[in-house]
Image 1 (cartoon, rainbow, N blue to C red):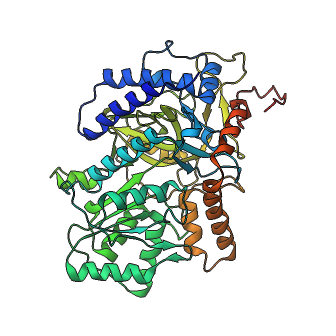
Image 2 (cartoon, helix red, strand yellow):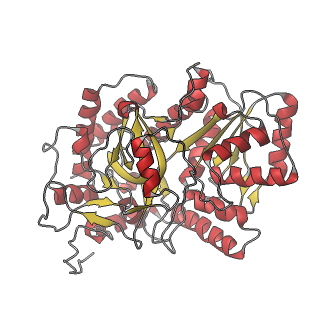
Image 3 (cartoon, rainbow, N blue to C red):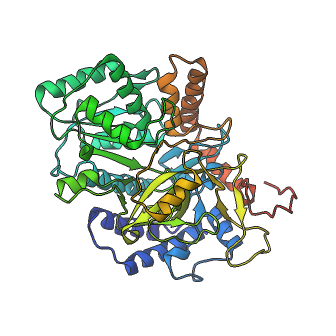
Length: 493
């Protein structure tokens, strides 16, 4: 069935209206549910991989009436398949997902013009609301970016997103300061000293690991700055522990020590390429609004919903209990509404906020199938809900239980270790790690070049190749697949 362009455009315009109304707007559960059902029907009709997924679960439009019951696609499927709900010929934007097993084939998330408007619109609203909540319309500041540029990594989501922030909120002297050989220390120091001297605040945005590396270097060289009030720091991507154990409190202490920026002006962002809307913590927004400080959380905007799902049976968990975070995002028009991620976290404030505490990981490089919650065995064998079997080592079962009992418990360590499959395309923070140490490690330099070349190769490959590739794909090709473990019959591809 051909995509109904009229329906897609109408949904896009109406969802953009919800986004433009802002993060404090009211979108009732009834409205959200209605649009979720419309998206489910559109995506079922036009997304072959998603339709195969739903058919294996025996769930199709008309069978469910709640957004919570729309089948969740595990984000690992995006690493092996082209999950698009529009004709790929109309693609104008693509991001390469980390952990992709093939350097030359799949693992790209495509968006058409409508999808591009949605992802850029959602994240401009989120960035303005949580990183620049004190800015009037049109106000800008100098932004210093410690992340790869789109020129260096053209299909990296981190690079694309931070460049959008630069364009929307930055002055003309804003700049990327992470090159192939590491941080451009000369220009970074110069920009920070200029801000000190002029009294004009700056914003720093970038990869968490890049800040840790820079702050530790400043400590060794006894370099400090006193940035003007109103300066702020936004980090994202997680810290993998490459430069030693650094807790979130350690990080805030370093920001204060090196830059003289208070914790109230430190913001963390959680982005997933597989879902459109990034989630920011609310510390700066609450400070600007004069609200009392509290444990950080990530408010979920009106056009999205987030649930923490039990790792064993994927049932929703109450506030404070740790599970796999699942997102239902109306801005996902070009892909699928519901995505369950490998992020471990919990919800807050009656489900209107969430927080991440770590990541789950693959076992032996593969996801494990979980029998359908309604049928112990269907005609396709073990079915299409996937789970992660264990948390990363720095988030032990004991720690998860402490969070489950009391989300206010202080974390002893929050470094995030992202364990890509051997030989796979590195995730954004992994690439940053390799860049930072590439001058001192031939192995890191090799991995840096391999990953950066993969980002470029994916961008340069003709779109027509992906169109043909998508025609060949079946969800049964997925490592966990739609097959029973007892069914080892090789399927045609």
